[in-house]
Length: 338
Image (tube, rainbow, N blue to C red; front, side):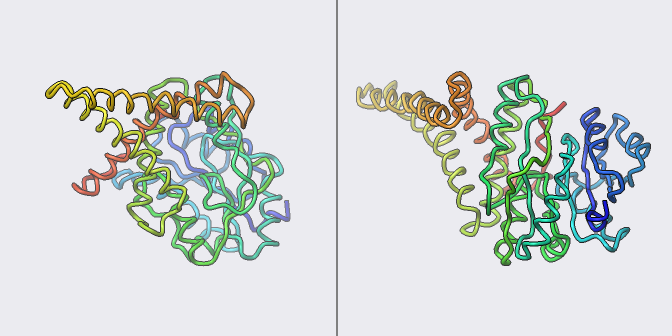
């Protein structure tokens, strides 16, 4: 493992149970590793210490975010292991592929303009629920230079210092925020064609799917609010789609129906049904597009329905973000796991 002597690992977790145990056991032996725990009550801290990991327990009197946990982790790793040059972040519900760290480190050694690399993240139990399978589909990102990464990623330590790490106050979307700031400073982010981690989403109910999707809506809105015209273009498009399908079109439908009920104008009733028909039309459009990508009609059909229904969940996240900025209350996590 001499080629990994300058590489460290930061694992973050909160009540991940057996998922965290699998994560720890997947870490290469001899690699400097730190576990940052965020108020777990399931014995995670004790198990981490029994595995010989250095453990940092976050002060829960301060607002908890994954961004804050990662920042605490890499800074602690840098102070206790001054020779570290690369930091692999791993979410506690993921297992690291055996050869990933060596491949990722080699990529950063040879690509001096690259701040971070990540690879293929796969879902551990995609057949257990449609929601898990959608996660596995979501992880299948394009190979090459990209706009942002996810939670599992190998960073060049100097770039984390330069950018002052993640934004502690972000409850979602902290990775695109950091990647955007790094790319604006001249760095690049790359997705490698290599197995990286196995993720266990454990989403088996519509309620959990709704909360996870709501969190994504919050992330899109917060990113665009924070960076305005400099925000990632694909994230702006996502936000515009959420506002249209989850907010504007429903309001227009209700307005047309209200006008018909109060005034009896047949044209407003026709407009109401036209607006309403847009949703099944969108479901069909998304379904056929996904079918062309994966070749599985059943998955594509359910995917199409959930993507369109998910716009309402995302809209609730957008509203939470906007209302939060207006009222400036304490922002709470949107957690989907029990």
